[in-house]
Image (spheres, one colour):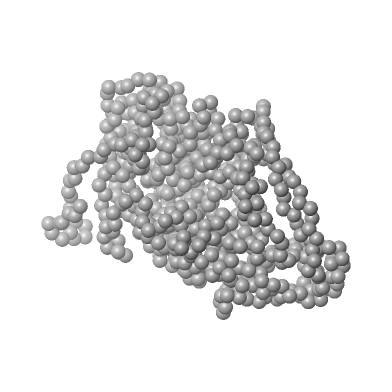
Length: 625
């Protein structure tokens, strides 16, 4: 709606207007959407999530003027900051959780609940403000009275709230650079055995990690609400993660819950504080947040099965035909493969910058500077690119152009190797393939230990959350480390054969100095640093890292020469799978036979598990005490 001012508004002046509107609550479990209610037929109660429920002012920015793009569901929000004081009148037996700080707890809480709230201000562990027993008791009654809750929130770009008599409510304070933040969770009994243990502590972990990599969390509250949903708003997020009726849960359910809480709570930073235009550029919201989510998941537990961030996990997307790919810089409403485009590829690109191109120290400094400069402002992609280059002193134009504006993949091919003083024949012998017995119900782990996990383990300054607080170690923590026993079945898979030199060929190697000339080509189009792993015949190994600038004069092919005083047995390009190279078959010398995708699928289909997919049942129900 357009509102014309009666006269021009000068700086410092105000114009007040009043809007009357109605918001209809819908069954969001049946009709979809981010807000509405979920009905629980077993106890006859509802859980309300009140989101996107009031008229909003369009953004007026220095960059674009008025942002008038309509909301259709995919491209989310372009919003302005404001101060809110909101009154919500609900049944007297409801608990309300909302953006901001409650102003009238003495009027809406029972004396016992109020006392628990006061105790929670200085507790060292989680305190239940509303207990499980109290929530279950309220499910059986209906109050005819009403109460009005009052919340106040300053400098936020939206306001959301949840209300239900089903809510169990717990709280824990966390210190963020000397400032207390109340981390809280609300959830029904259906999620109790997961949320009581993890939700608030995951929320606190998220704030600490994000604050370390961006800016200190500026708000006084952060909340996680279990609502069979996943959506973010300032100081409050709606998440999922419910248990079986016996209180057990699958590992996939647990990991999915931890991941979604980190992601949605993390949105407080992107875009709630670093306030990009989601309606135009989804990746500035989802991609940057997914990258920070990846950092937080890695620091939660070194064995956490991250799904987005490591370079090798984006390869299958990058392999797709060009007509199925779109640049990251595509408008939100025009993206077909939204998940890979807006979430995975931007997050992966930032991780490649951090781990492989810039290095952790330089990247972290520049990324933190971006957050500091653009907090409570409206950055555009150009602002992000420019700040990263300005703060780091690095020329990254080639990377923004290749990774964000283009769809070319990385495919660096080791075409041939010229060896002097060596006379190794072409014949090789092939070891016999062997069978390996595996547990079908094995723990969910990443199938590859990526460079971030290895470096995090090696960093003496990093303490994982599950080590700092051993109460976070549940059955599955022990199961992932072989410390928990379960009743399992077994199956066998075929381990691909290895190719090696024959003894006769090895004897042909002679001389004290060995020269290797590597011919490499860029078959994918996207330039990347060249990482070479040398495996020597004496059993040792070494790695050479060549800057991406080696491609400056010729982006199609390069030749590099090396000299060693020991014999090279094999060469591998990108040994830690850091560059999202889509074709590993041309990364080796001598070349080896790699099993087909179909064969790998047959071998691993019983093992492949991912977040949100529970395969092989619930091992927690089969544990052996």
